[in-house]
Length: 81
Image (cartoon, rainbow, N blue to C red; front, side):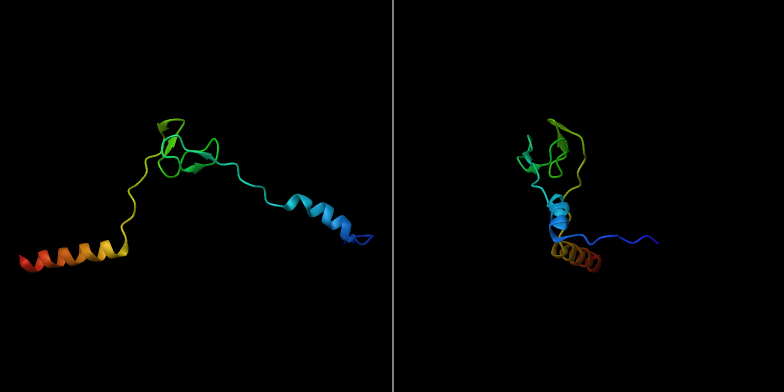
């Protein structure tokens, strides 16, 4: 198996690693809702791209409290019948 012939110096490692830094994302505002969106991507908040609806979004999920309340109402309705 091959082995490196020379030790990689600290400066050499740092020069190589200088490209590993994260770059700031370039965000723009959605034309419909104003939320920050990546350029050339559909908005995850409203589902629009270039002024028209391209993704059908589901309604927001119900919270645990809302689900529990609905179960209690259904149970009451069953007992009343």
